[in-house]
Image (cartoon, rainbow, N blue to C red):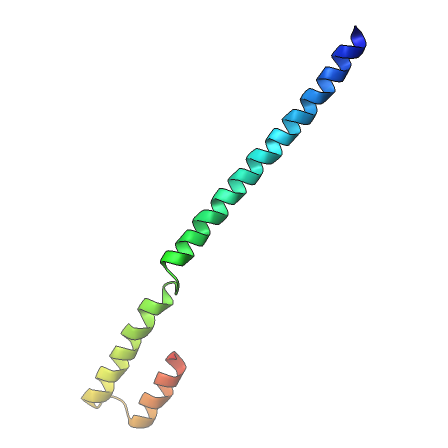
Length: 80
């Protein structure tokens, strides 16, 4: 009778280990899915919003005569 109890408890540990692995895999999969979804919704990150604003500012400064044509070209190239 002891033999059956020992065998059953070792299967319990195996099942518990597999259960933990499955939970961990599910958690990692969920996190990766959320990251993928976030990147799909916001493909360019924050840089896509910052760059046009900076370029518009440079255009305005050039139009006002605050910077030269050479400075405008150099800054525009740096931003792109």
